[in-house]
Length: 111
Length: 115
Image 1 (cartoon, rainbow over the protein chains, first blue to last red):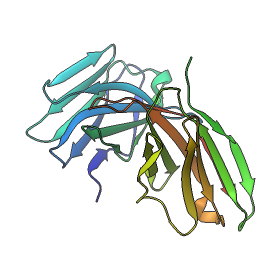
Image 2 (image 1 turned 90 degrees about the vertical axis):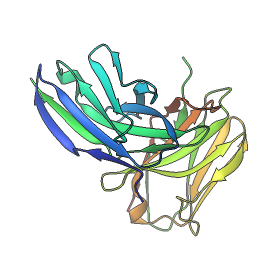
Image 3 (image 1 turned 120 degrees about the vertical axis):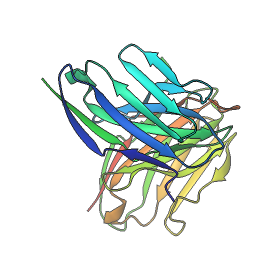
Image 4 (image 1 turned 30 degrees about the vertical axis):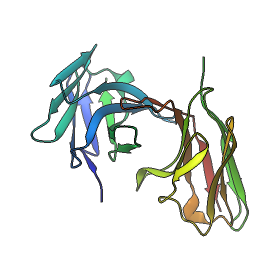
């Protein structure tokens, strides 16, 4: 059973546009929600993360929005750049446990 | 700059051969993960260790896969015998897992092709 569902599987956005990726989870024990970014030929790397006691976290052009009651969280990439073209994974973790990853979203930013 | 090191980076082997992938986790990390990535299945957790003890290997086909951590600086993933469906990128990751909010660091992967 997939505990973290991610959508869309892929998206294309024009340079300067906003990329939005959504994730939903089921396990209410999850208390840490990171996003990982993966470039072709590389391993995933931590991009930004949030805890459920805040509704939004912003780092540069990347923002996580978190809705605890709906058990949903999303990544917004503002002013998308070609260098943001990558695969993005949401994940969720219960204390001291393993990360559960979503299925990934391949983002292509067209110049 | 500390990093997770994986070898080999690329491997092409014939069906039926044994494949061993090695990982050197970041010094001081207490948890090591093995993931497999394919187009169809995304990132799948195969197994993970904490303080060298296996915690969960339920994602691993037991008949042909085995994972070990002979010491704190080496984790291995072995496939014997290999099959074409094992073709994938295998990632090792490590982290200092304590309570929650743990960052795990991935290696660059071992790209396996079984022909």
